Length: 108
View 1 (tube, rainbow, N blue to C red):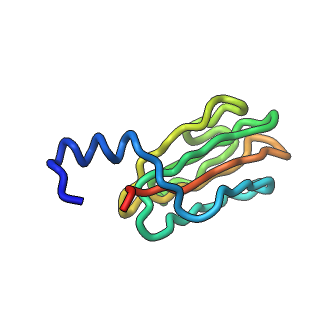
View 2: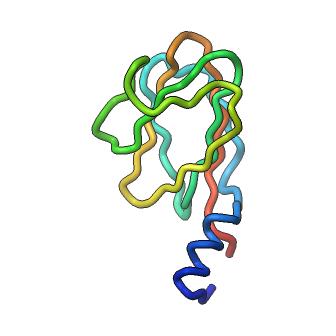
């Protein structure tokens, strides 16, 4: 796909081509790292149920129940752009959080 850099950015921002399966995680009482598959440019992420989730993106800081970005339960899913070196690490704020996620990339 030969696109002008601006068109490429807009195409990436407004398209969603799933890579792999939609996944649900119900056990993250210990910090859990999500590994991006080859070709992934974004991660669609949502905390469902009744428990908030914390996450970090740098691979250096481990989230805790009080540290990290907050993914508020039952809020709409968010799309996180991912590039080489981005490490998504998550932990639940309390027991029994449910996290739904889907990796995505650019259409071929």
